[in-house]
Image (cartoon, rainbow, N blue to C red; front, side, top):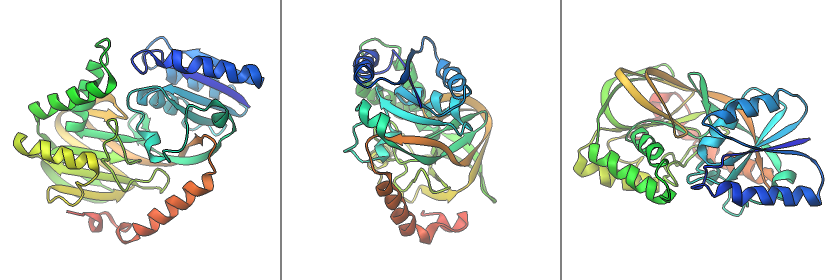
Amino acid sequence: MRYIFIINPAAGSGTGLQKIKPKIEAYFTEHPGNYKIIVTSKKRQGIELAKSEALLGGKVRIYACGGDGTLFDIVNGVAGCENAEIGIIPCGSGNDFIKYFSSDIDFFDIEAQVKGSSIPVDLIHCGEYYAINQCFIGVDSDVAYNKNVLNKVPFLPGGLQYFLAIAAAVIRNDSHNMELRIDDMIIPEKNYSIMTAANAPFYGGGFKSAPDALPSDGLLDFISIDHVSRRRIAAVIKKFKRGEHLGLDICHYFKGKSMTVRSKKDMKISLDGEIVRAKEITFKICERGAKIIVPGCCTSGLKEKNKKKIASNASISGAAPAMDKR
């Protein structure tokens, strides 16, 4: 087994490299093994680095040492490579995908990372990319765009970046006119504030935007919220943060295999926080598209957690129209 640690030196306001590199070196000094540390030097470089390591063949564990953007790169580098497993060492400001797992799991424990088991998880296929967590259009993508801009401001903490990014999006409060196709159901053009395609529950530093999402159930959670006034959007976002929005009359919730979104103008689309622009995009489930290392954890417990939650959602697992919780 090879162990590849791809570190984003900008993660965690520049502290990620200093935080994790000595831990990796100390572990392999005591436990010799075939490992490599690679520090990225430019945006999206992690995709090619991960791909080249996976294509060397043989079993390999490739660790994303950074934030959501670093994980996005590694996922896109190894997607489709059966020999590669993905590890996550959360050095960034968000690290939302791992919030699905137990808070007792120490993702910074290198020994637990090396000895941990891996589990298959679904991915979201979206155009030329894959996402592992959530994709957004609307206020959410405006927040992600603002957050990426604020990342360039030196010495600004991640939590404050999210706060300022949200505040700017709420003040602007753009409406987004979109037509949706969820599996075989067409929803006519309408104005929305929020549109989410989710594989896991959290985004944005802890917003529980898709509370029922499971990353290995073979389905995506599609959540839309009608456009609302600036006066109301702040209250909606509060419920959105706590995962209490599904019961709102302006919220629509479906589970399905794919959703196509069309607009007459270019949309800012957030793929795990990375922004692309298009007038049309399809979010499609890629079942068991990646293997994620769960450090020091008995994965059978997570499988049971999934089974129980799937069973509790059985009443809404039919055709998409029956799943609207409006």
